[in-house]
Image 1: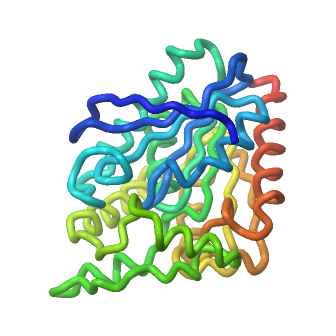
Image 2: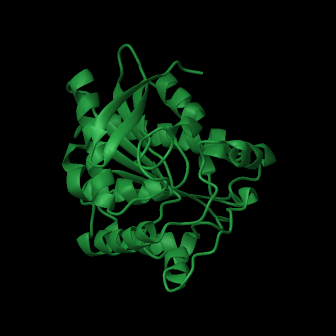
Length: 272
């Protein structure tokens, strides 16, 4: 695996931890945006592939996640998370002036990445959305009206067909295994609506990847969101029988090859 190092910055709601997988002469910067309840350390193998592909890779733990400060999984405004990710991008650009930046977001990280692209997309070379929480997510509509939120843990079997992925997730002390926080659900609902209203990503090359058997973030709901934001250059890859975490699926080599092929196509474009 590629070597990594950590550093910190003062984010919008406290100290955030960033992991960096350096490259001595990168072709591009890959900015990884993780999902709900997890942390950037779960993306070691993704970063390793990207480093070998020529990237310098950066990824923060969001507020209330992983090693970053804050009440666990409490996010009251996703615009603050977008701002924190932008701080990481600015550091990456300072480290690698003139190098194109590719943003890669998974699940809730896909929501953050989509909103990021609407706010800061002019500075990006490409966007990758993996199983993004975008469009319609029934979890929010189901839970918000309840007087008391259920303390029902996520079923690790829904992550991947590889049982080792679920076992590692269940045993990970940096993963949140408790209930949703109501302010986080409200913030998710607000941001879903904001993204839909803000509309098209314009000319930004975008790759959407999703598992056809994703029970956590169902394909149909995300497609509604993709249709709302799709711009002039959208590539779609839907993997039969794959579950939510396509980067951790039994066909993860195929998924990562699709991502790097997409990035190659973008980087060789005369517009980059």
